[in-house]
Image (cartoon, rainbow, N blue to C red; front, side):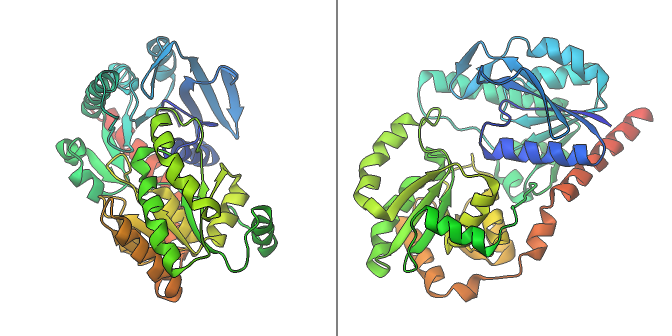
Length: 387
């Protein structure tokens, strides 16, 4: 099949949504499908057209931005060019352009699968309010035009004020997840690179430095953890500087993080092997997310695959990996004390939270996820042919 995948940001942009889309695109291409990704040229240094691991990526010029969204006036033109040539369209939202793309696909009777990653919640303010309104309108138009809606868990769908309106169309498919293979020498090299001592009790967090990730909850929990484990140390992996729209949040947290001194270390974005080594070095990882912009938290599954337990917020969807696997603890949102207690418990009794990761790995295998998307498109095409 010839498939078009559309989303606002694609690689090298770093977010859970882009990682999901990239893994899906690559897995579909490996299964023999012709995959085109239509996205923004958010950075002008990126090529407008390139082929990445068998996937053709077309980036459209950005005229201006509204909050975290981008405005691409050429998107409708490219929709009319590309959609008639494909057998199916996969739209990843939040995405302002999903609405016109879904309508063009409907016009040409092409099946549309909407992958709904999360609800959009922007900070208060006039511009952000306009962006929220525009995004919600686009999402509703897209959901009505879509033939199938995919989200990570039924738990999230039933608790989402948006998805709850479209439950008959919703199918729960877990996100595609891979973790690079590493040797003990790679783990040892990681420890040396970041000057980790044998006595350090390493707590991992992998995220953007963004308000919805609940970084402040871990910052507030650290003094309590240090009372029990004076050598505890947070390794924060991910973008922590110049995060779009999060400058004020970073500035607010900076003094508290500075007070933690050597007990908090930013390491930036890591290559896949280094990231896998990080997850094996960490004794526990934290996912203290705060709202429905987090629908699953792929990093916690990556952590579990590496044998590392997780503490996650009690949010729809986010709680499911821990509840299903038993590899960690679920805590109330914004509860620094509960987060500290859960981390301390895992550090003290790690064997209570270690399970066989093979079933988790199989459930999230990108090849298996791509096969499920493939089946959806085949069924939709067959249904269309008989109408």
